[in-house]
Image (spheres, rainbow, N blue to C red):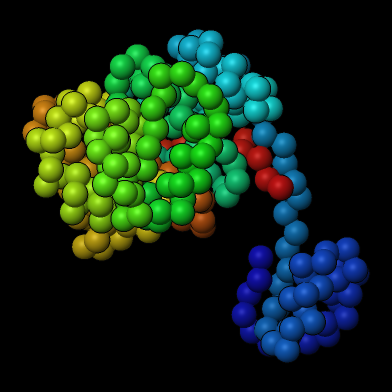
Length: 258
């Protein structure tokens, strides 16, 4: 933790500089006189809990094969909320495995015949998530991206076959919703809308994205649940994300730190 100001006696930091390479780089910078407080937060192991009983064996097996022995408590808590039909806000530290919290109910629903819409601010993150889903090797989970780089053939395939669709807010606004009649097979079975990096949706833009997500269910009278994710900062997950719908926040103290 760093605070701006004028510092006297950087010699007080000398022991930490030799033990913490990142801190050494910071203090060697030309503007090293600005840090006035350094706090080291030690690593903390996550608390594992059993897999939720409703998760299919093939989903558990796929994650186990990737080295995930069991979910952490915040992941299981978020998954149970979503499975129970509640909107959920997952606000935990960076690299704390937020994606497993929504993947468990989402993949379970896809295997049961439902569809899932994943909305992310960037095409790169959508491509990364697509790779992670495909690496699980789950038969029946037909995932695809729908963005500005998608070819006509890829868009046609996604419209006809995708059950886990990854897209961006602009494509949701400009292509999916205006063409909702052609996407009737997807939207009529929509179970979850996953909103990643939700802290970036602010002001008028954030309100518009929220309206677009709500419109996904409007024409087909479905009631998909919304799961939003953000890396935790100093503020609570509720004030910003809570305005997008009533949702429990999942940010317990047993998330791991590295």
